[in-house]
Image 1 (cartoon, rainbow, N blue to C red):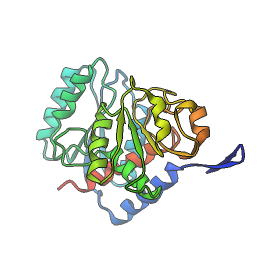
Image 2: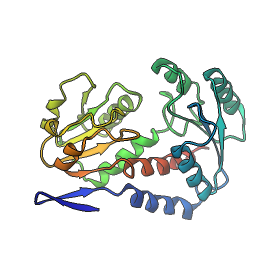
Image 3: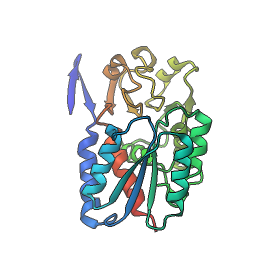
Image 4: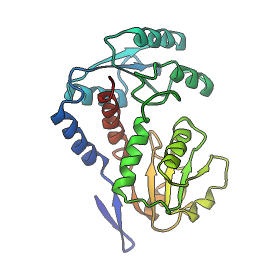
Length: 259
């Protein structure tokens, strides 16, 4: 979808359409048909969260046996992961964040307890899979035709996603600059692309970014870029409807690689 704002054509990237194209390819080649995925939800709810529901619906469409396992305590969650690790009928394991009551360190320990061969979300540091959200970012950078000499900023570089994203971009031959929430974000004006993964609604304001920048918003659930920042972008992913749908498909691409 394109919008005209103050005479400048802006592209709001349609992640749903792109995800649909990629899902059709997965569906046609039957890469995940018959595989199984366990999604652990430990956010205090006893019904599926919106994101879990979308993941389950996509899996069922692709012929995956998806089960949602609700856990009320982190101790119960750990026990469930151990059981799924050992269950030979389970191909993939995913812990849907957030985990209620868990500290950042505890979340890291929980994710690290997932069998690296089954960690299709790729958030265990030892996972053999590229994190699903980072696979989605990679695909976007191909679509956006990002070049090696483009100046790229990653906001939230100390978070679980940000750390892995920085590592992956360097592997791809890029030279990203990392920023944390307490840093001087007005320096983002010096960058052609800004990727943000803090989950802090509207953290990046219009005065922080350059006119015509490209933005990839990984902030959940409301988006890291303020409306003023979005208005200055020439190309940006919205929240919702941007990276999220592509991340779901990337998850199943990883599941298709489970041996």
